[in-house]
Length: 626
Ligand SMILES: Cc1cc2nc3c(=O)[nH]c(=O)nc-3n(C[C@H](O)[C@H](O)[C@H](O)COP(=O)(O)OP(=O)(O)OC[C@H]3O[C@@H](n4cnc5c(N)ncnc54)[C@H](O)[C@@H]3O)c2cc1C
Ligand code: SF4
Image 1: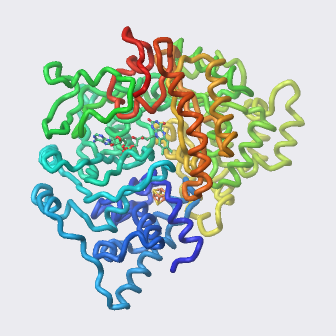
Image 2 (image 1 turned 120 degrees about the vertical axis):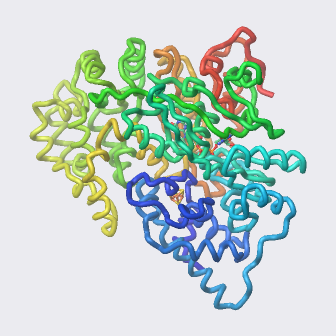
């Protein structure tokens, strides 16, 4: 039996799929690359060990194969630690140990049950690409969403083409078997599992660039990180958010919003066209006016399902001018920060804009939770950095933003100093020194002013080694090598590849609430207060997330987060209690003819619609949510 710490780790896998992309450039799990079922990646092995320990699955033939495929290379330890501080390697070893013990016992491993549906699917997709082995299916049976029970799929299918999808969907329709579609499962809102089939789109990873028309056609298995890497190599950028999310899945479920949405938009703004297979197995296109696809450009105020299985999408490429850089404009309060961001958006200044709060600022920068907590306190209590407006822009945009700010800003150089010198920046003696010199200005402005730079640099001694000193001794060398790479402290790179944002959930799983609202600072402040009060009332941790202006600052995306221990039954209960208050309140705010806001609950699955149709009120008004 694995020790308590190992089992605790297995139970806390976040399911954000970061071990399914090579986001640190340290190599991808070879077992998962060869057989890309989730179960063969570290994420799946965490679930298997957890399920074994709770006797939810027996030792199966699939489990032995999965255990054998892991060579304990340790790549997952750094990938996982980087954003969660979890160390999954002992879990991987525990699985191998369980397999070895089982073999020693001489008991035969359990074989997957015979199932004629699975046989028929095998004939469509090929024998390797469907499985009903419980060790495989268990990795598709749940996610950390606390209010939905697990559902063990009858089988998991990895289609390789649109034709495969058509045939499998027709078969499911004929047999009356439900199915769920899965990109990388990182939506974590209980949407990607089903007691019928799960269609994992991971094999469909084609990318076809059309630079002359600034578009790229992607398969539904293409992740944000991989597409961005290819786009950047060709001198373009795509608007993507979480790196492990599939581009198609992200567009369909949230409309795909990010700080870049200030310039590049959201929802249907991303796409030239999308190809779907409907629930009867027929293909149709989003932009085909005669095929009914365009009906999906409108928003319906209800909880629905995706238009069909998306089998490819033609998405926009954006130009890169080569003189882009980033900065953070510091504010002590949310409302002035929102006003500044709105002003930039109205003037069309900046490509990526976001108002970040202390939780994001601190956790994005920190490789450990202890450092993040210290940074969060220091930013707001000592430096006067309660909120920061992130701006990525070309040279002209940055000059304008700087002029509008009219005060020292955290530019690329200061950012690098702060990022690599964070352990020293949060020391009491550094903070006292900064406060002693602040005078009329908050300490963050002293820290950011050009004349103070030599002193600040001497005090912070920013370097990969300084930052790496914050992590456990056996990981220091790896962190030092990682942070020696300039991109790890480069504003533009970090924002377009977004490898640090999942750090917001380092200590606990994130339950994110996304609202599409007018960019009105009093309204946003009051919504945040209420979201915080509801969490507080139930005893849940919570924090402001971010606001990004959309549509020239007429509207905005607001994220507010609750934090839960996904394996703690008490947190589950607290979440249920808080949701009981939140749901009627938010539903009422978003319904009725006068409502001018929408929340993700009804947009989810309609992300391919025009953003205007959920950001604004249309002629027909809004019904109650059914
Ligand atoms: C830490 C964190 C931060 C996040 N920040 C952001 C953010 O800033 N912006 C943002 O937009 N999102 C954000 N998200 C949400 C997340 O990126 C999206 O939910 C994204 O869709 C996840 O991608 P996925 O491939 O894992 O989708 P999945 O979870 O696999 O699927 C999401 C939904 O899309 C459906 N779906 C997936 N693929 C297809 C397909 N081919 N055809 C039909 N339906 C399909 C699924 O059935 C499901 O309903 C965040 C998530 C996390 C965990
Ligand atoms: S928590 Fe670790 S094992 Fe789980 S998905 Fe994330 S990187 Fe993979």
